[in-house]
Structures are given as structure tokens and as C-alpha cells.
Length: 327
Image (cartoon, rainbow, N blue to C red; front, top):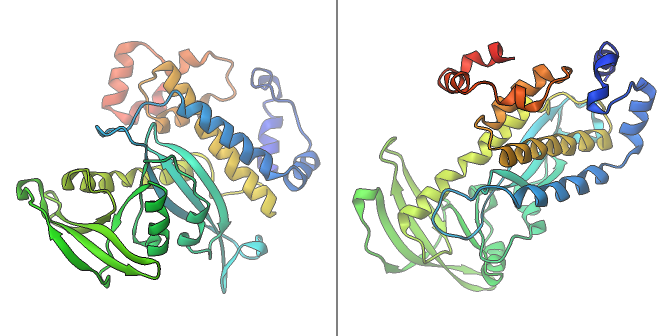
């Protein structure tokens, strides 16, 4: 926090175009402790709605919404963040996230202590009817699957190796697509039998074999496999925000300060995504983050920063190393 305040102080004459004024360290510290993080959480929700209205659709032909569900852990020093106890000598928080594949936007973000299991947070999710959620084996819970089926929601995940099921029907497959099996199965639960679909798929590039589980019987087996492969985008999202939004170093140690910083980072992500969608800028979000960071204190039009001459833009796209030169 001291570093940030000191850096702002050395750029006082350049802050007017950002709508920012100098701030005392005590004022910043009071805001960290007293300004409720729920304010930033609510603002994040409103910005997501605005961004999703102008976001491009996902890459698949089906019209249903597609979401990826996952979490990422951020390690914290236990002595500085005692409220975030995780293990004996470690602290941490977990970012539970739902990524909307229309524009790859964070549609849902909840921050909890790292010890909370992923399967417990999904009960808070309220997805649009008919949408498809994709997640890994950590979220497998047959009782939750029953709820999804009753709510007309679909899911795609991987089957656990120790799963117990009964095959009721075998479908024809095209092995040239990599699909090795397509079966309808029944899993016994406390609430009765649950009818699901088991799909075997071998990645033709890596040779690895995967078993997928879904309650969607209308899409082709290859599309189900491609949907799960698309789940990698949420891993890319986590890497982007950690590298570019400073979510590994916090300017406050209280729980409220940490939550505020996380949601402010998500707000910054959505603002930049909205700018990208509305302007048609050809840069990726990561490239935009890097360009803006080194030009933040310059009084320049965004168009000058993000839309240099056309030939130069094409050259940048071919050689990512020239980004530092653009700045």
C-alpha cells in the first residue's frame, strides 16, 4: 500500500485525466477496513450484465449458454492473514468462478477460505434454463446432478474411475472422430436412479483417453468432448488475472481489504472487456492490459494507444515481443 501511495504521489500532475486525486495513506487504510466489499461485489454483477449484452457468442453451433465452473487458490502468509487459515503453516483464499464463454467473462465470483471444498459452493449457482455447465471431477455430486436435471440444466464433466453404474444402451460411434464409446448408463442415488451418458474419447493429438459424463443426450459425442476441452479457457482466465491484475500481492491484510481488491480486479477485467467488444480492437485482453499499464499516467487517447497504424498492428500480432516497443 505504501508503494502504491508513493507512486501516485510522484505522478500528481498526471492524475487529473484519470479522475484521481492524491490520497493519504491513512485514508486508504480506512477505506480498506471500513468500505464494505459487498459494494464492489454488487458493482461487478451490474458490469457483467452490461458486458454480456455486447459480448460475442461462444464458438459452438448450439445456441444454449455455455459456462465453465472452477476455482483457483491464492496462497497467503498466515502470519499476515490469520483469518485465512488453510493448513498448519499456510493461509489462502479460493476464487470460485463461473466463466461465461460468450466473450469469456466472469459471470460469478465468490471468495472463500481455501479449505472450502468446491462442491459446496455450486449450490449458490443460478444458471439460465437450458444452459450447459462444464467442470472437472472435483464437482461430481449425484445429488446436485439430480437438481440440475430437474432445473433443465445440462452439464459435462469427467467420470471418476471408481464410479459404479449400469450400461443400458450402446450408441453407434464414428471412431474417426476420436470417440471410442457412447453409452447410456444409470447411476443409483438416494433419490432414485439417475440416467446419464458416458462417452469415451481419445485425443488424436496426445493419444490420451478420457471418459466424459453428461446428462445431454441431444449433442453428438464429439461435441461433448469439444465442450470439455473448451473448459481450458477458465484456466487461461485464472492465469491472466493473476499475472496482470496483481492478485498475488494485496494492499491490505484484512478480509474486507482482500475481498475488495479481488472484486476491483474483476471490475477492471470487465471494463477492459467492454472496451474491447465495443471498439473491435484486435488485441487480446492480456495485450491490452500490458499496453495500458505502461501508459496509465500518460495523457493520451485510448485510440492512440490501442489502435496504432494498421501495418504496425499486424506486425505486433506476428511478433508478441514488440509489445514493449509499442509502449
